[in-house]
Image (tube, rainbow, N blue to C red; front, side, top):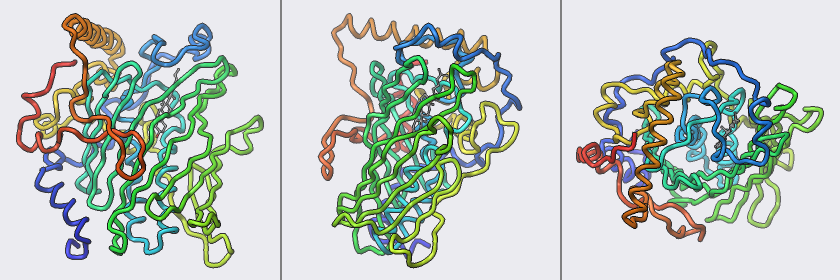
Length: 412
Ligand code: CLR
């Protein structure tokens, strides 16, 4: 009901509409891939990794059969699976309870890591990925802004919130586990429906992901560490502790946390598991337990154990093909081949596009050209003071003007 929107919500809705963000997304999101089963050749992870101790992921040349048919850009888009939790947060009157929902959203990003022991494709420099959902009312855009080290910058928008940040991971295989440390800060601007605060800014950093159980031949992804989600307008904080599995696996998936008021008093206690459900109850014991978030069931028979949301990401309909930039992951041939179980083509095309990237870099270097990202630029966040990626050129606006495709560089 548009008449109930606050003026800032309405303004953003108008922007999403006038920029025709949902053009191309007329078809329903797909529910299956072309192939029914993932028949990748099975290789022992340890057999390949044992010679790569001390290396990071960008310095490893692994056979393409270690990949899944997504890119790291799309893995970031997977953060958007549970935007309904943000839409709910917006309706909550009280800022501390709202923060509990924001915390649940931040934690929901880890549910997708269950049974996904595979390497996403490393995006090429300048590769982009857009994703919009008319049914959920948001649009998402991400660009690979640096190759070494790999960094992507993302921006998602809805009438009710903006979610944006930097994805930059430091990874290392230490001989026992493969650890992935996210470095970037993520921000959320929330526009509460009560209109008392026009827009709140939150920020947090992601926790460590780690592939454990490699040597014993039963690799699983664990996520652990402390996440501090800060409301910079009210100075309230949500702290979530992701416990590591430990030797006995007793703490697997466990999250414990609190929402603190501006004086540091706990007002909400949060508990649950990142692979299942998260609850909040008042720390003083009053009132009843609230379900903040619940995982979506994984469909059977989907290759690579993709979530139902992840399945939708790489779909290339005719409608979309007419709209997306030529740098969009959906047009990347090696990944498409992987998705269609053409593994030899995938390996060959992966070599070809990576070789093409090296040639382009050499030409740039020879001409003394310095690469700059097309859509984002580094800046200082006006509220938190952190470094962040600010939108420089407006992807969706260029797209609406029909200028995107003819201005896209040929990177594949
Ligand atoms: C976790 C959720 C975050 C974003 C994010 C970034 C990097 C991802 C990580 C997530 C999940 C685990 C991940 C990792 C990069 C590499 C690693 C996919 C999505 C895999 C499991 C490493 C495989 C190692 C091979 C040697 C097989 O919001």
